Amino acid sequence: EAQVTQNPRYLITVTGKKLTVTCSQNMNHEYMSWYRQDPGLGLRQIYYSMNVEVTDKGDVPEGYKVSRKEKRNFPLILESPSPNQTSLYFCASSYTGGSYGYTFGSGTRLTVV
Amino acid sequence: DQQVKQNSPSLSVQEGRISILNCDYTNSMFDYFLWYKKYPAEGPTFLISISSIKDKNEDGRFTVFLNKSAKHLSLHIVPSQPGDSAVYFCAAKNQAGTALIFGKGTTLSVSS
Image (cartoon, rainbow over all chains, first blue to last red; front, side):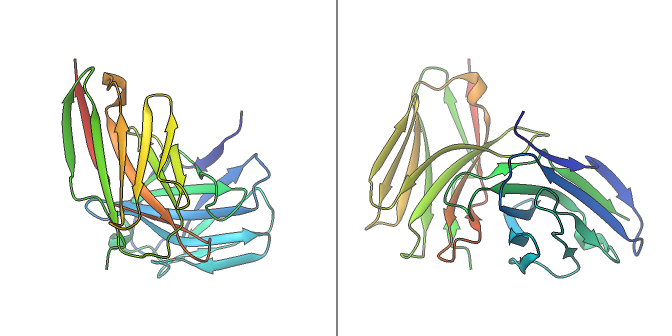
């Protein structure tokens, strides 16, 4: 089944403790991206990757890092999480950067206390 | 400043009637628009899209209309079904092709 898999689905962590949210797709998509969804703000792009080793900032990149060492994986790294990073995170992939519909993962609900 | 706006946070319709969800955008350079549907505890799923060279696109019960002069698009669902109850996001592809810019979403409730 074609899908984007995120892990974990739920995570509660403490301020300052480094964490990684994994994202993997099995569709051989070149493009991958991370979004966060917050109440009243919709979905906002954090980082994106047009292909392996090619990443760039989205609209809200502060406090996040990403890497794209393999085509299928695009982990989101929070080096020192803070409470304002409490959010619902979605990973997405596509053959191109938006000309076709993105396929989204099921989301990761992160709470930083 | 929000480039894609969904001004109605919620919409309630009866089963069998038409649902009309609206979306406005500010950037006249946007050339591709999409609608996504999202159920609780799931990721958004692609519903329908439209290129700026068209003014209408249909897929079964779903039709998207684009009015470029007004910078407005709408999603029509006919007939509405209880399973259509979800959050609907309007999105536009940015000029660089590196992102979809989303509206805040409209929660549709279809009652039987």
